Length: 263
Ligand SMILES: NC(=O)C1=CN([C@@H]2O[C@H](COP(=O)(O)OP(=O)(O)OC[C@H]3O[C@@H](n4cnc5c(N)ncnc54)[C@H](OP(=O)(O)O)[C@@H]3O)[C@@H](O)[C@H]2O)C=CC1
Ligand SMILES: O=C(O)C1=N[C@H](C(=O)O)C[C@H](O)C1
Image 1: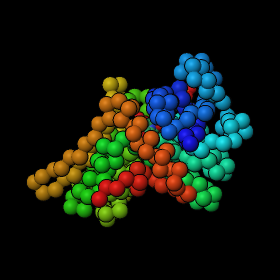
Image 2: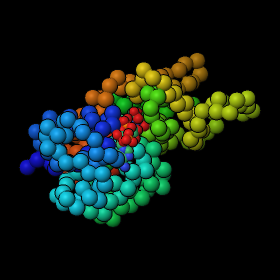
Image 3: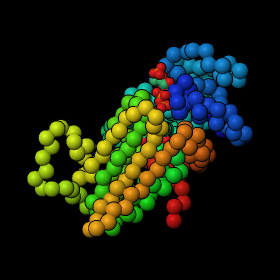
Image 4: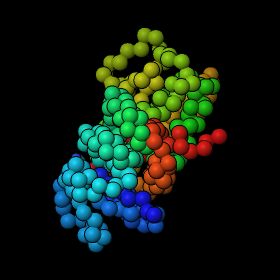
């Protein structure tokens, strides 16, 4: 039996790629989409896929959804996910920009409803490895800064990937201030954002897709761990894997590192 999927955000850069991926995967069935507006999208029309402007209406019309894939923006994504989990619809979430409180609420709702939910700030396997290797390196190099670079249309900064990377680094590194103790920013923001002493620098420029460098500094040496997504196909294998895995889950997972065997 195929896995019945609804995609939220089908006109978007990620959503449109995900629509093609789901249509091509024999074990998946795209039964509907949720969009902010209904506009003629030929791939939807050709494949007779209904588009709803509210997830509530979608659930009412399609009561047998197995998995919601959300690729929208944090505000709408949060509402979709909470509603899906309350209706025991499993979720695969690529949307970023959630607050810590929103992520906690999603986790609590998934656990309360015993419904699988994978929130992955980055679905590219290479990016997952970049974060994993960074966690390993941070044990030996506690001084670290992150440069993340994205296309100019990205709304949230820092990226979800950068925040997840810091979270993983924090698991192995004690909080510390970096740089000179009397460091002075003569222009606000010169040293980027800081989480637990790790500085994050966000670049937004045309010509980029999604890129991150994690730079470690030690006595007389540096180590740079770098990942580049050069197109959005890079994220599709991770979404495919997550949809298959979430069908076996009854709780919450944050990050693909927790469903891949990285040993
Ligand atoms: N986890 C991962 O690996 C990746 C995650 N992302 C994240 O995925 C999200 C989408 O990225 P991207 O595709 O580049 O962004 P886009 O802006 O291209 O796509 C977002 C889409 O969501 C639509 N949308 C907005 N509000 C709603 C709503 N209420 N209901 C349904 N659809 C809505 C937008 O419509 P409109 O334009 O009309 O507002 C747009 O079509 C972002 O949060 C991004 O950070 C991106 C790449 C990889
Ligand atoms: O908006 C994007 O494009 C991306 N967003 C995710 C993030 O915020 O980390 C994943 C990837 O970096 C692309």
